[in-house]
Image 1: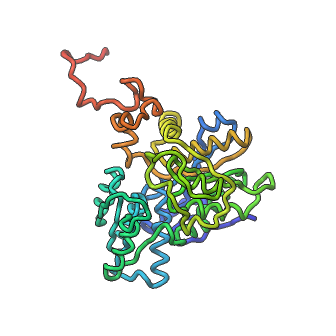
Image 2: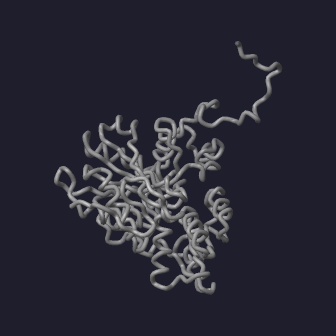
Image 3: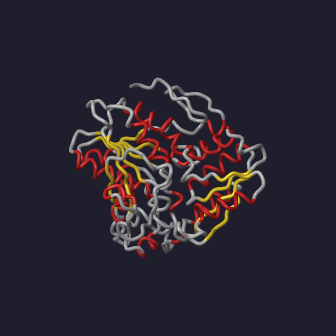
Length: 374
């Protein structure tokens, strides 16, 4: 089965250069990037879909736009209305951008254990940010549940409900999955991604399972799960049970099956430790020139595991979710990594690593300026 065009509101299609209509028009049609070092090490083609190149900086731009457009079509979101959401950050950023472009008020509820850069970005975009204590989902004061109640209290507001609103999943089934199929010309053996809301993995898995690849086989779909999450054990053994202790990752790995993930065709799951995640993030930075966040580290580490399972000659696609700038105070901070016991994983065990050093302004001045020879 081939797809000649992809028709979805706010998402580009085709290879031609064109003028897009505002922020929404620039979402989607992100390139696939061949990860040279990881491909060479495994003998497979490991490709990352560059979702960090969306205008809001992450894969969540797609879900944010889809959720708002769905609410508009259904008559739930009217001019001058408000969008309320509970988020670990990237969906909040996407929603704030789209709300600005369309004239809506944006209210974001976030747990208090996220990187400061995310709060600052969302506030800079003009959204109202409510930070709440991080508690288990079973607690009525979980950030998602607070967002749902808050939406009922604000006149003209809708709750985005990204975890269980299948407009999230549908846009990935309708657009992102077919983009991957087109870009690989059907030469894809496996797809893998971590999941938080379940929208990206759930939608892409449904799309790719409609095709047979160039080996006349189904595309295998894997769930990548960080330590502390319950989804690896759920997919492998049918029971929600955490694997290991909590993770440094943000926005992925949960203890329930969301409406977006439920019923999605998954062939297997891969477990990724924080050590593997951090090592991969820094390999992406040093060897590929890609400054990415922790979820991308989990995804690429999982892709490498799958490549070794399948053997040389296969093509594995994953998601490069967002850039690393939102994690500089943590993932790219020597002191924070040291406190987590992850300096060696990052390759920063030596005190004078070329990756993270004091700024020039913090270094002592030489007694005599260095002269450059003619």
